[in-house]
Image 1 (cartoon, one colour):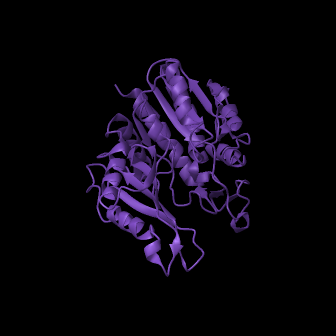
Image 2: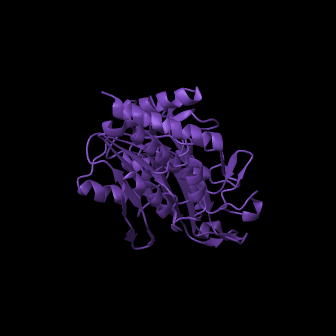
Image 3: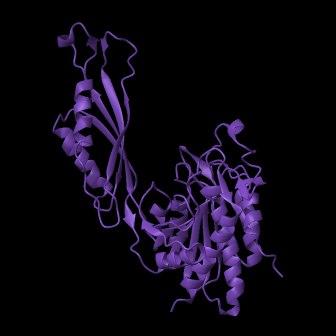
Length: 385
């Protein structure tokens, strides 16, 4: 008889692996050893690309047909920061007063453990009546460049004929309490670097120089003072923030030759990255056309309209917690931006209050509750007509 997965113990085992991106430190192996006895076929999927670190990933599946529900997540974590500031060793997975402390407790090793336990419970409950498939798409490259992880896994698997009917991403989605929020989409993200060039000179003889700073300031003011939109049905208004302005001039009597500025746009489903770039350039061109602009779009905005996946999560969360989750598109980007090209996707996990912070932690009671939410979600999805 297969030993039941204890989501608390599996959470602690995963936390004890110091899998700071891109190091795996055995975290994928811990999950693999938990899934194999359940009948999951486990496949490591390492990827490499010039200029980026090598990353190992895991794809595990049980079942060969029927409805296919995937759980996506990551075992890599961010650095611990000042280790001395932690109450306990960040990789000891210490339990104190009903709380588990450790890097990755919230983001997002606990969710992985909860879904593994929930999958085992549901498959056992369904017995011979289970004729679907459950898979785990787990990367070690979510907190890093996100180049050698989820995106490449999906491409390879899809090329091999793999398909999914829905995917749950276990990112922390709740602001304060379990059951408050499900993410059904994300804003796109565009990063820009503006460079304005002039002519260096003496501040006492400005007519012999060309100061680029005023032009850069006017250009930045132009994009800050104009809103992209007023929001849409499921998205808040797009936002633009200046992140840095750099001259690198230590002298007080020198007009600099160049100035660079960075900015980030979080845009909703009214725009594509290409549209936003054109909007930025159109506004810059009102001031001058003599500039350099580098644009990187790390993800497009997307929305999975409310439907069976979000409904199942919502009903399960409400039954367990008594709260009816808000369907939201707030926050930053996640690997859901890759998954949305292959199947409906929704995100639901723990509270994000301590993610990436010192003393990242999760209540033992929430581990139990999240496991039950995932179990009920699977039951609803697989047993729906």
